[in-house]
Image 1 (cartoon, protein in one colour):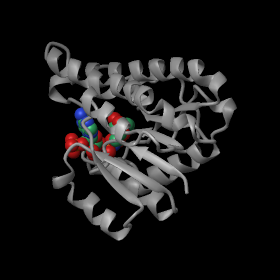
Image 2 (cartoon, protein in one colour):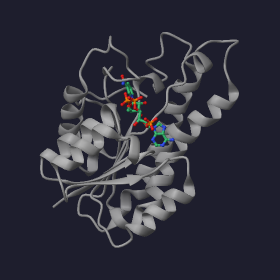
Image 3 (tube, rainbow, N blue to C red):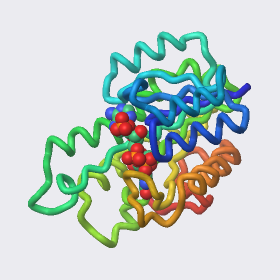
Length: 232
Ligand code: NDP
């Protein structure tokens, strides 16, 4: 049985990843900040007993990450999905209105936590044949794609994530790891809003197809949910 560890699974894209991987026979380590209030995730876990394991995890809390890694120290993790993310809107979108504290927080969640997770769960992933690390980024972090301006905080945090994961891909290449970045599309979630172009179901099934097909030649690449390469 293959195992996936996913962050930010109480709603949106993360919850859908849990649903689809559990349905596909994977063992799912579903991390969420507040298990007791993650009602949809709890309902899903009840449908898949012994398959979905819920763990409390705020990805900015390095002690909690270390504690979870210790708890899972004898595990094998085939796939790590760094999904948790924040999009500070008013406080990060507009020139003259940027909140620099919110910017710092966005960097902690969107840019630093994915590397911390890879670091903390390196041994567990090393035990797998697959050794895959995927971080959910955004086209908004693409410098080449930026035609709209604004969104200083979100864009920069995802650009930083991209370069961090590129370095990780190069550093872990010789150890057989595959590290990739995925843009989920514009998805109808709390973050994407009701006008998003695709459902979480479509986004996640596309991303799962891309993840499934990743080979060593794909490490360090930036894909969209439909398999297209996204320019840096
Ligand atoms: P949502 O806002 O719907 O969900 C975000 C998830 O991240 C929630 O589960 C949230 O948990 C979790 N999260 C936030 N901060 C933390 C933290 N400190 N520790 C742990 N979990 C945290 O967003 P989406 O599902 O739409 O987004 C998922 C990923 O996809 C993000 O990385 C996002 O940037 C990316 N993305 C989304 C797009 C879209 O159109 N929706 C487009 C491009 C990229 P909680 O409920 O506890 O806050």
